Amino acid sequence: MSRIHTPASVEASPQGSRAQLSAVAKNLGSVPNLFRLVGNSPAALKGYLGLSNALSGAELDAKTQERIALAVAEINGCGYCLSAHTYLGRNVAKLDDAEITANRNGASSDPKASAAVRFAAQIVNTRGHVIDEELAAVTDAGFSAAEIVEIVLTVALNTFTNYINEVAKTEIDFPVVTTRRAAA
Image 1 (cartoon, rainbow, N blue to C red):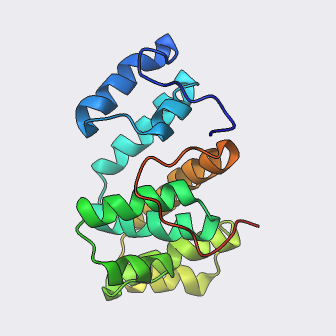
Image 2 (tube, rainbow, N blue to C red; image 1 turned 180 degrees about the vertical axis):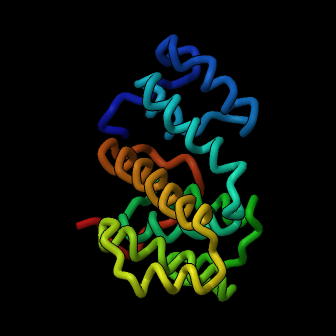
């Protein structure tokens, strides 16, 4: 059971979040617990959905964003996000089990994507204090300035969901995947 109230439905959510949650339901076919939890604050939901929607039109491809989400969830020890992104990785991004495992370990079987996932993991592990060589490695792999900014945004957005889900202990409504790393 969540430590922070999660409205049971769109209708039970704050009035200011209902339209946005209805749009989530239309797009996804349901409203996962994360969205209803964040919807306790219409402002937080608006910000979260705004950033998520902005990334849907990003230069950084959706598969790489999903790979980064898996790495960040594993590093931060977020079972909810790891479960959700494993499901999305398999069913939407079409990542195989070996790739998902590599992503959880901060890598990828694709050399270019591996540079992005490693860089994202370094951002999380150093709280953004990456060294010149780490930035050079992602640039040398062919990522543009825009894509590097989007890698940072992907890390930040996923860190937000990891943190809110860990603070709340959100009930997992995806097939459960257990993190290997416990959050410190």
